[in-house]
Length: 393
Image 1 (cartoon, rainbow, N blue to C red):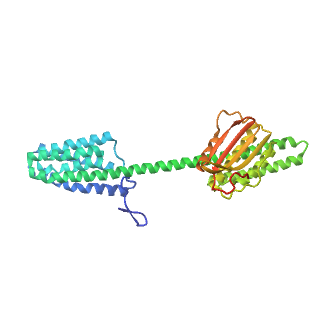
Image 2: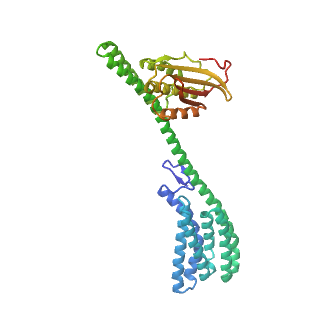
Image 3: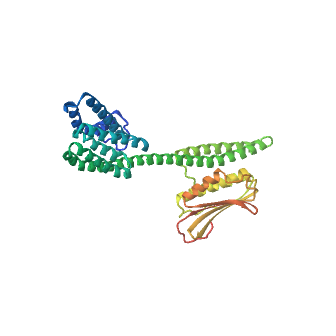
């Protein structure tokens, strides 16, 4: 356990790599304190009466064993090795433990406890279930050569602590997987926010810039003969550009919620400025329409009219808002139909793709395509049950 700058106790998170020197020290102490049980091999090297060659070989073997053990277990607590490296290091421990215990005596049988800990904490569960009993059996067979009583006393401990460490290893792996999933969720949330911002900017600027372009063309044509009317168009351009700036700022901050009534009023202005005969419904009744559904329809209306103004070359455009009863329940249907060519694209553009995503989030649907005398876009969103189903707005 560590403390932050305010003195509040904080636990070093399990399954996380050390992020500070203090966490590194805590994890090192937590793992290294258990090396105290290696006192028997150390005492045997000092007082065991082994020859110089055996003492040197035993010291080197013990140093390698401890180094591999610490490396394997320490890395498993935060950034595990690949399965191949784990098997290689575990194999080194699996060779050193029986060799040292067989050649240097019963004082070295305790190495099998560390071997069982390492295998239980780092190996996959299926492999650990076989490796731990195998290490206990190997220890007992080696103990028959030196001290069977000591081997019998350690047999249960080797098996018990090995299987206990499988639970710790599984907990560490689960924590690591949760950490990765958390990072993935954060990345997906960031990507979703980028898509939202891209959709909003496309819908906002596409509509506003189209209107600015139309009014600029009108002002240019009116300027020689009708400077007063041209000045009015320039004033309208300034107003639209200022509103576009406000809309973009709201979209960036995430507060943009277009209202269907306001969009209907803007549609009338945009179509008239483009020289398109407009048929727009009066103030709609949206009492039982969820806010998210209304917002999705407002974006659909803006995108549809923008496409009419920019691409269709239409002379007439009709906007209808109807309530319908479907097999899935009552819906509010927005239909935008014009008599133009529908543009030159061969597939759905970014605007229609974004609209489909918006409507799907609100539980609605989008249909768009050529009809006999022009182009039609139909957007539907679910509503609460109403008494006057089928009445027009």
